[in-house]
Image (cartoon, rainbow, N blue to C red; front, side, top):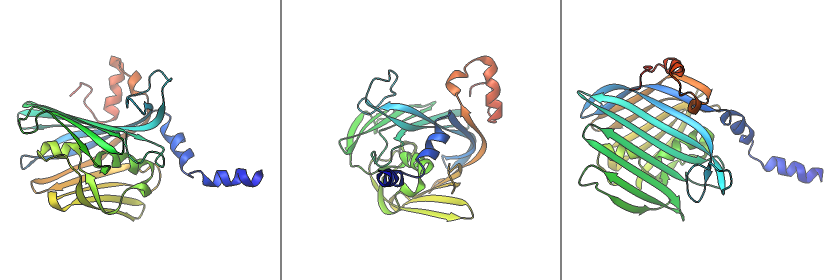
Length: 280
């Protein structure tokens, strides 16, 4: 009996308790100083990465609010950027829902992206069902238009940011196919498809870097993070022909129940993150 129990313990992921102890106590909110390349120039701005866990319905692929459905715990990433290009402004947000059970769920269940600027809006949603991605695109631009498509079970670039925080060893490496980030494809009016990429995970002096290189897109994305758990993201760089975008960690708050902090006096928390207390 003792031998069987010991075998069961040894079979459990050693990091499972760390994940629950760290991530199930409120949100992690990190603010980044952003230098966004757009129209061949760099524009100052800010970015926020908000990581938080929640129960997520596997079938409907929405938050389990009743507690009665077939759900799994996900680590959600809300990634936001805010910057201006001369006179007019840009606001982007990507929400990705990745189950923390990496063995049972090979991919995120859902990822959505919205982009707003003074010209118009775009919205993209990807759902993983039946071992493929079901993608919907709604756009102000004629050539993008309203589209629906199905993609193979390649990794979404947008889900890899969460895999990195849970277990970097589960990141794909070597020659692989990746569906590039939705912000990149929309900003550059590229087709949504799986693209050949080279993925490299490297480590030096307690810091790690995950690099995705897309030869056909002339694009490289590098994410710099702490090698040790909880693998805090310190910086990222995106290099394309038109220029380089960088984001560097500025402030970080842990265990924040931000959904409760909606009163005027709670605006002080924005100052702690280096953000203007008035909404941008």
